Each structure stands twice: as C-alpha cells, then as structure tokens.
Length: 380
Ligand code: NDP
Ligand code: MG
Image 1 (spheres, rainbow, N blue to C red):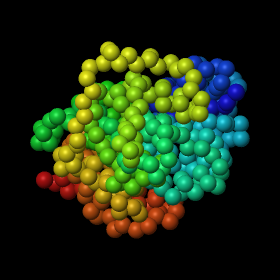
Image 2 (cartoon, rainbow, N blue to C red):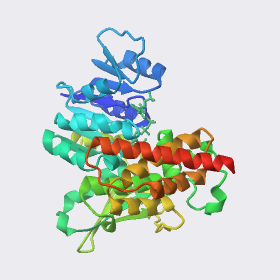
Image 3 (cartoon, rainbow, N blue to C red):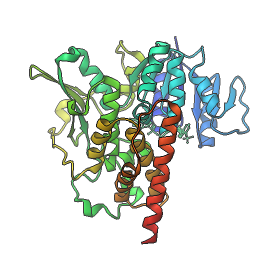
C-alpha cells in the first residue's frame, strides 16, 4: 500500500489524481492534500476523503476529526517530505511548486510531477536534490510521459530527436492580427483538453509548449537542437521519439490526464485505468503541421532561453506567470502577453543561477519588468 500526498488537490490535475487513488484502493491510500485559495472546495474535499494531513496556504478555521491541519509554505514542504508519504503528486501550479518539489526529492520520494514551471526554473537544483535524496521524478505532463515511455525503446545515443506534439490551442489557424482582442473566456477554451485556467491560456499563447521544450530538456537531458515541436490538432499522439535508424516511436491514447498520472504512480507497472480505451477506427485522420516560429514568438523565445541558460528560463516563466495574471485581470491584451515576456527577457541581464536565492531574484525581476511594460502601455 502506497501513501499518497496530492499537492494542489483542488485543481484540475489534483482532482484527477484523486480519481486515480480512489480507483485503486488496494494500492493507494490518500495520506495528505493541499490547496491554496479555494477554501470551500478544500474543506469539502477534506471532509469527504478524510486524509491524515491537510495543508492550506493561509490559516483558516478548520476542524475535521482525524485530520491534522497546518498552514503555509513550510507546512507544504513538510507534507511533501513526511516520512509516511511514498508518492507526492505535484499538481500545484506555477513556481510555487519549486520548494515542495525540492523538499520531496531531498526526502527521497517518488514525485509524480505535473508542474512544469518548477522544472524549468529549478534546473540544476532539482537534479542535485534528486541525486542527494535518491528519489524519483516521474513525468505527468502528457508530452513528457509520452517521451518517457518512448525512450524506453532504445539507448540515449540511439535517439535522434524528441518530437513534442502541440494541439496548437484554439487560435493556431488565425493570423496574429486577429488575436488582439481575444478575451480571457475565449483564451481558456481549449479544443482538446479540459485543464486549469493558467495552463489553458498558456496553450493558446503557445507559452505552454515553450515551457515544455525546456521541461523536456531538463527531464531527459537533451539540447534545444534535439527537440522539435509539431502541431497535431487531434491530440491523440502525445509525443514521439525519433531514433537514428529512422524509427519513430509514438505514444497514443485518449486525451485523459488520469492515464499519465496513474502511470507515474504505478511505474514500472501498467494496471487498468479509469480512462476509456482508445478506438482508433473511431478517430478522424491524424494531421501534423510544422509550427512557424515567427507566428509563435513564445516558441522562439523558449528555444532562445534554453540555449542562453542562466536566468533566462526563470525570466521566461516568471514574466509569463505575471503576464497571465494581468491578462486575467483585464490589464494586458492577449498579444501583450508574449510582448511583455520579450520585454522582460530584453531587460534582464543574464547571469548564472547558483542557488534558490538567485532563482527567486530573477523571478521577481521578471515580474517587475512585466509590470513596467504594463505601465508604459497604460499611458498610450
Ligand atoms: P489548477 O489551477 O487547476 O490547480 C492548481 C492547484 O494548485 C490548486 O489546487 C491550487 O489551489 C494550487 N495552488 C495554486 N497556487 C498555489 C500556490 N501559490 N501555492 C500552493 N498551491 C497553489 O491547475 P492545473 O491542475 O491545471 O495545473 C497544475 C500544474 O500541472 C501546472 O503546473 C500545469 O502546468 C500542470 N499541468 C496541467 C495539466 C492539466 O491537464 N490541467 C496538464 C499538464 C500539466 P486553489 O485551487 O485552492 O487555489
Ligand atoms: Mg502538456
């Protein structure tokens, strides 16, 4: 029996992870949960599931028999490293996942990681924590899970390319000038996946794919030159690995995140899952389009950041997180998201990231640069 802690339990990935835990009462027991702002949803979940520990970001009045409540970031890290926990599902969004990720890895946990921002920003720190604690990092993000599975068919030196597929989001067929007045409601309507609001927006700007290019590089040790992106609007192939003999391994399934979540939890075993099986004869044809880098600056900037290294990936992420907040608040336009990220990258003097303090400083700087961009826009 494995004890599971779901960090970010009220979110899209968090609730699907709970489904997986409940689908396998013989394998998994829910030990701990966390949430950040949705107090009512959190308390309803704790009441219904009765985990042993529950962590909320700020102090709240909560009393549920048998449940130990604690509050704040330190408590979140403490849950991630709790000796009773075997598997941490990291479904917190944003760079806030970095501290609990490091805590879990240093304590030697298996981390089923959905959060990509922490991998992009954490860089060497994550690798070091993994080495130190002897834990395991198993990808949940569907593209990375696909690549992880396809890589099991050969050795590192036999791989030619990682091919990340992208749905292209809701607007990839529109011209850039048609996107100026896109509203938050339009931007989060994803064509193939149902996800949290921030990642849905990131899919529409292609920032999500940019983050995933860097995430793949971090997880599997490949350079930007070895990672391609291919638009595949049906989201049936979740990503591929091209080998040097000309073979391409692909991973296909329905667009249901419970599959990669479960695989990260049961690996190396495969067990029946709550996801419906894929019937290929019911599917329309599969199509692929090479992305135009000029049309999608978010991708171009991600490759630039990966190559530049240092604080650039942190700035890319921090600027995008802040720009997303401002877009949802109606203070930035849709196209201004990528413009403000470019502005932040331009204003940032790149330097090596030697530890957590450097990362947090670069993240803060990126956010301030986006705010400055927004202020100059609001004058014109
Ligand atoms: P949601 O916004 O739906 O959920 C985020 C969860 O994290 C919520 O439980 C939220 O709590 C909690 N949270 C938010 N901010 C903080 C914070 N500062 N500190 C602690 N907890 C916090 O996001 P998703 O589930 O969509 O995504 C989660 C992560 O997984 C992201 O990094 C995303 O990129 C990645 N991912 C998601 C996929 C998906 O299908 N949704 C697919 C692949 C990757 P509360 O609700 O109480 O505010
Ligand atoms: Mg993904």
